[in-house]
Image 1: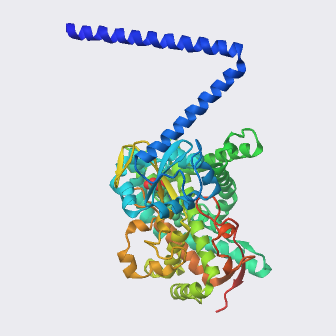
Image 2 (image 1 turned 180 degrees about the vertical axis):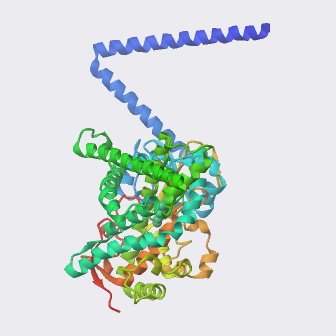
Image 3 (image 1 turned 60 degrees about the vertical axis):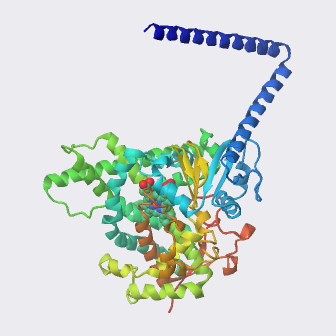
Length: 561
Ligand code: HEM
């Protein structure tokens, strides 16, 4: 007892002494700075600037040193681009596509590289073994880097599944897996046919009037119609008129803010108000849909009948109802917000990515019709009856799941587009525990970039990576030999993409039925323009999902043979 009291007294004394010492130092510095400011303001400002500069330099050096300590190839003087104090690779990331730069580094220096960005030490990995380690074996050591990666999309994603973690993520994933993986897939062909028929109407008109069509934009509308139909039972007109007009401008502005973050601070400018207004409108609109659906379900429950086809929202509400001891008459507001964020998340995750994948597939088909169109057409005609006018057919006329599974060439074409164009080229993770990869040490709190494109473009796994070759996904022997972690468009492990089967199913129908009906020709571009040197690289410089830098404007003709 005495000794513990003694040690307490000692501690108190030390604490008091330390406090006193701090006070003396503080007063000394404050008085000197104050008199310097009074007597020689210029020297004062120079001292502050010099001190700040030295501190930043030390910070930058420290980041560089840590990279070296971990023993990894450190990108201070890489062959392409040069790092700068404080900024690190920021200027190079603005100058080159970040994922291209990282891919070049990986090819030159190996599967793991380290660099600094705005004073932060970052790691990039592009190797199947390391990727499996991070995405699967050590999943408990990493989290999504939500506030860096999805910052400007949080107005849409909110607390939905893409941005959630731990228990909340697990709960949502369990709830969504069944509806998305199997239940909804039976409805996708019918939804896709409806959306395709709308597109065919405008394409038929374009054939008559010989007006060129913006292909990427048309496919974006189509995928949004499929998602909003399958998830919220929205008719196409509503998806186009209301949803596309409020929602798409939000997505466009959020995309802009990724590379021009200052736009978020231009408070009061017309586009800033427009964005705020649209976000509010979208939230009100989706919340209203959810409340109305809840009321309809209560009504149907009371009457004991429900003949509607159930969409994803119904299925998700049904899971919630099963969790309730007594089903409330009005859906609690916190649940309205939760379901609203979930639905908005699916809109975002599910429409632009699939549209981008199809756009690249069409781009390649147009670039090499002799090699690619014939097998695609042959398969499409075997699955979709050629005598039928698919622009006027009904869902009952559609081939069944077994027949749709025979669209193997179109699926291989889509997979090859995902490989060559790596629609999502990179995803980010943050370590929450120290991690050891190979012989390298990655400390807790680091950012790790999962460089999907780096694996997709590695000739060790994909010979002649820039060649577009759907055969890679048709040859059974090649597929069997391949490490699954060399093809990661939907990543892998527990947080893999929930909509991958949906995306491939709708897209192979679109590819087959549009190719069966039309011939497309790029306006102002020729097959030779698929050239990746310098300015001729067809990809947008920064957008994710990766899209063409210029809208693909196409001339449309009916296919004759
Ligand atoms: C070609 C189309 C698609 C591509 C390339 C794609 C790619 C991806 C990637 C790379 C991720 C991982 C993101 C990360 O970890 O940060 C992801 C996650 C996700 N995707 Fe997709 N996606 C596609 C289509 C879809 C569709 C159609 C839906 C739904 C309708 C969807 C829903 C989701 C969801 C919910 C997640 C989050 C899963 C989780 O965190 O547990 N995706 N997707």
